[in-house]
Length: 498
Ligand code: FAD
Image (cartoon, rainbow, N blue to C red):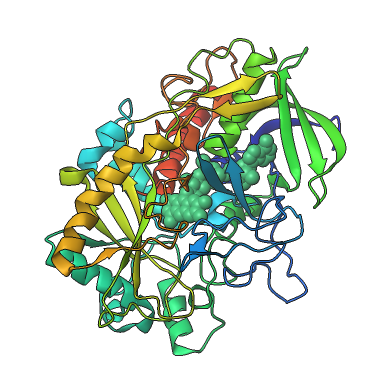
C-alpha cells in the first residue's frame, strides 16, 4: 500500500528475484515482490490461462497491436497478425540493432521460455564468471539451483520412439554423421507429463504448440517452484501489474521506491511510494540495466559507478533453418520443448539447440538456435532528449555468431547435400540475426557490484539477476542465473542481515 515500509523489496519475479524472495523469507525477512506483468493465474474466456503459438491472441504480446514472432516468415510469407493491445506475456523489446525477447508476468522468463536447464561445462565456467569460485558453484550452488527448479532429463528410450521428437532424431543423425557431439539437454518440463500427452491421457501442452506465450500444463515455471515455496512461508507478498520507476535514498535511511500501478492497457492508474530497507534489483538484464542507468544519470542514485550499463551481450544467439531432403521428414507433430543440442563449443564456439518448428504440418526443415562465443558487448546509456535508455548494439555485431554457427551447419549441409532455408526470417534471408532470447549483463558482478551483487556506493541495494553475468554463459542461461543468485543471497543473508 502507498506509504508502507518493507524490510526487503524485490523488483521483478524472474529467476533472481524468486531465489532472493524465497531465501530471505526463510531467513525470517518479510519480502514484497513488485512485478510489472500480470499474475497469469486466471483462465481466459477459452478456459485457458495461456494461448498457443498457432493462434496467438491479445495474451501473447506485451503492449503490441501486432504479433512479432521470432520466426516471422514461412515459405517467404509474413505470419504476424493483428492483436488487441494488452499486457501480454512476451515482450519483444526493440532497441536500435536488436529485438530482445523477455517474459512479462509473475515468473518472468520462466513463463515463456523452453525450460532448457543447462549447466555450463566446468571448463567453460572461468570465462562465464571469472571472479566466482567454480568449486563452490559446482559442489553447492548448481546442484541447489537444479533441485529448486525441478530439472529432469528425457528418457532416452522414449526419445528414440516418440513421434514428437522425430525432428530431434533427424538432428541427431545429421550431427553425428558430420562428427559433432550430440547431447541431451535437461529441462524443467515434466517428461512424464509429456509421455502422457503423447499417449493421449492428459490435456496437451508441449504437443499442442504451447511455448513462447506460456504453457498451460507440464512446465515447472517459477510459479510452481521457487515462488510457490516463497509464498508458502507466509512472508512474501507479490504485486503484479506494478512497475518500479524510481529508487532513491530516503531521508531517514533505507530507500524510497516509486511504483506505478498499471491496467491491462498499460496505462498508469496510480502512483505509490514505499520505503524499503533493502532493494533487490531482479528486473532482468534489460530491466535492471535500464533502471540503474536512468537512476544514476538523473541523480537519484548518484554514487553508482561507471560500470553500470556496461558489459551487455546477447549470449551469441543466432537462428537458422536447414532444408532437408524429401526422404528425411522432421514430422508434423513436434514437441515445443527442445531436448537436445550439438556441442561444438570447443572447436567452433557454437552450441546449437535442435529446436522445433511446431507448425502442425510437415516442413522438411531442421531448425536451430545457436549460442555462440560472440565477443561483442554493448552499453546502455541514458538519452535525456527522449527520456529513454538506449542500447548501442549493432546488427552487424552478429557476424561472429553467424561464422561460429556455420562451423556446424556448413559442414552438415556439405555432408548431407542440403542447403539453408531462406524463407524463415524474410525473403531470401538465412540468418535470424535480429534478436536475442538471452540478454545478459549491464550490471556485471565484481564491476558494477562487488563480488556478491552489492551495488557500489549505495549500501542496501543489490543486483541479483542476469545483469550480473557478463554477456555469455556458453549455454542457455537460467540455471546459471539461479545458481549465482543462490550463492549471492546466502552470503548477503549471512553478512548483511545478521
Ligand atoms: P527475468 O526472468 O527476465 O525476470 C525479470 C522480471 O522483472 C520480469 O518478469 C519483468 O516483467 C520484471 N520487470 C522488469 N522491469 C520491471 C520494473 N521496472 N518493475 C517491476 N518489474 C519489472 N533460458 C534458458 O536457460 N533455457 C531456455 O530454454 C530458455 N528459453 C527462452 C525462450 C524465450 C522465448 C525467452 C524469451 C527466453 C529464454 N531463456 C531461456 C532465457 C531465460 O528465460 C532468461 O535468461 C531468464 O528469464 C532471465 O532471468 P532473470 O531473473 O534475469 O530475469
